[in-house]
Image (tube, rainbow, N blue to C red; front, top):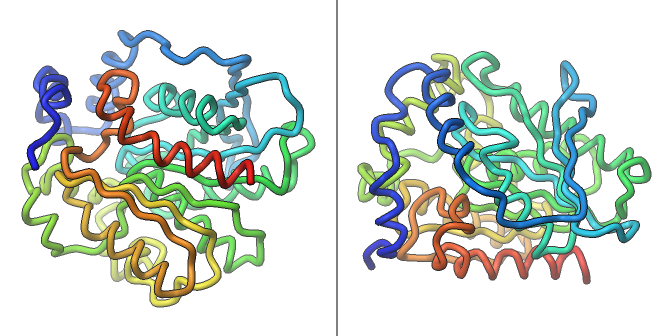
Length: 306
């Protein structure tokens, strides 16, 4: 199936060759574009603060859809290949999550590579989840209704946090929402088929990973650098996995979902053949992207409001 026509039109005006130079240049180009976008989803309150990270204070943005007390909470990790992205790049998606899932959203500005290569991001992700578990009262949320969510690299961080929570004896979230996760499985059919797909190509994957891994090989860094190779996926939170047909990461995400299911997990998986990697970032701009997001928003709401 071809890519949604309105999405094609949007992608045609986006800058090309972003991921060939230094990370700072790519970030500046993206930030300039984000600054032109209006806020589409108004909420009761949005504010920035810090929480303790793995090393230093960790910036977060808190989204509240209403003033109702003890709402559930979603800890959200943005995408961007562990190199780009931040609170502003995924502000629209965080707002949509808060509105449609009727929950507080804690969006986490974890440390980025190449300044902070692996495992900095996963350390901050675990620190953020642990903080919410321990400080739900301060945050004003229900400690028994905590979900993890993320897109792309953020989905990887959500899944990795579940694995680390299991290792550290922490309670699992009620759901891990994984929008097109990267699991580190190379050589899949979709990586070959979509090597030149929009937004994420074989070349840009190599660019992201070179920064994130700091020039080291996956075999040097242990299982949490390539979670798709972890043998035991039992005892983890229920998962909702969303995949895009025109995405190099499609098959590794599908395989991860199937392996979670085989390990006894409750798993729902959606595949949208007319979507590309990163489509959740366009829910305010492309009607079909919003339509494709509706099922995952509903699943998150159901998990948080059983």
